[in-house]
Every structure is written in C-alpha cells, then in structure tokens.
Image (tube, rainbow, N blue to C red; front, side, top):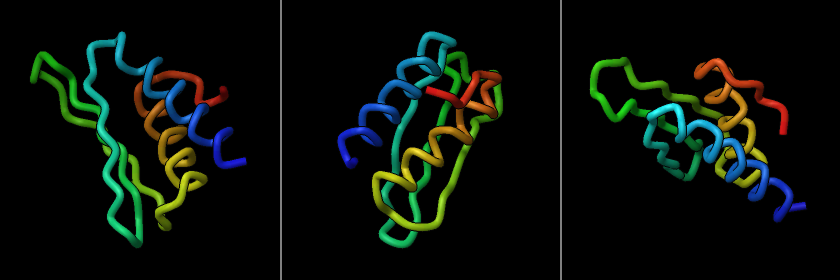
Length: 75
C-alpha cells in the first residue's frame, strides 16, 4: 500500500507543477506539510498540512494541496 500512496502523491505534485508552482514536501515527525509556491512570486503560497508523518498522511495533504490549486484531488 505504501507504494500506492507514494505514486499517487507524486502524481498530484506532477499535476500542480505545470501550473507554474514549485512543490515541496516537509516531514516534521508529528505532521507533514506540502507547499506550492508560484514561481512568479506574485501569488500567495498554498500550504496543506496533515497530522501524522506517514505516506498516507502525505497523500492526504497532497489532495488538499491539489484542491487549493483548483485541481481535482482524485488520482
């Protein structure tokens, strides 16, 4: 199951980047955050956070980030 979450999260990030965003993942032991910063510097960065620091939580944060960017969170 772990590989499924990793692949799905990577797919979400790949769909956000063509819209001009740099995406980064930050594992903080008790939570995980995904950041999407527009490369123009003209937009407010999007930050999605999920409690827990596993691949399932990273995927859930990725879904939130996709929704913030106006993309379908479904993979």
